[in-house]
Length: 230
Ligand SMILES: Cc1cc2nc3c(=O)[nH]c(=O)nc-3n(C[C@H](O)[C@H](O)[C@H](O)COP(=O)(O)OP(=O)(O)OC[C@H]3O[C@@H](n4cnc5c(N)ncnc54)[C@H](O)[C@@H]3O)c2cc1C
Image 1 (cartoon, rainbow, N blue to C red):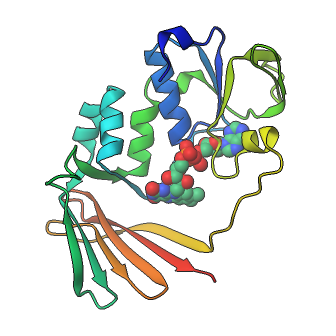
Image 2: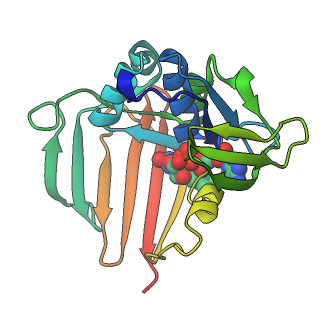
């Protein structure tokens, strides 16, 4: 992540304690790089359904020392199936052969993933806290917070891990509005036998329906529906 010669001399500020922010905090802690992590909400949110981790994500989590947790709490899938809207198979991709078999493809409940990532760093999170102002300095970034308990502080870098409508991005790059791709996604979990269910994408003319098992013998499935608004 940082070559030793590039090790920051001051702290890193992470704004946002979601998947990206918690993952980064864990890694900085492991590398003994000082950091501060702030979160706008009063508590950690685990909104959402399940989350699929392809092989590259699992490899990254192993690198972070979380391989055992991932192996223990996830459900492995072995192939991806693409069908038409009637369920007739169009194509299948095995996840057990090259080039996709560099690690396991797994899925788990989103709240479980948060639990894994937050372990050991959740005590460091400053809740109900946002950035009021950032000013670039010669050596880093001077930050003022909304939280009176936190003094103005200079950081080597500020990492915007504050989601799709990132406040950090707005502060640093005010003139970069989001591009609406015209895609709407709904996700939910439901009870469904998963013993012979593999991730299945049903492709319609303007939408996709996806079923993805997230728990062995839990009969829980994640469905995602995308609809193009154009
Ligand atoms: C309701 C919902 C359900 C979802 N469900 C799934 C799912 O089941 N599976 C899936 O793969 N993806 C799901 N997603 C997509 C999801 O956005 C990403 O998978 C993932 O959460 C992105 O992680 P992140 O850490 O970048 O951002 P986020 O998870 O959005 O985390 C950003 C964090 O920053 C905090 N924050 C925001 N603004 C500020 C600020 N100004 N200052 C400080 N902190 C701030 C937020 O409170 C939040 O804790 C869902 C998204 C939503 C909104």
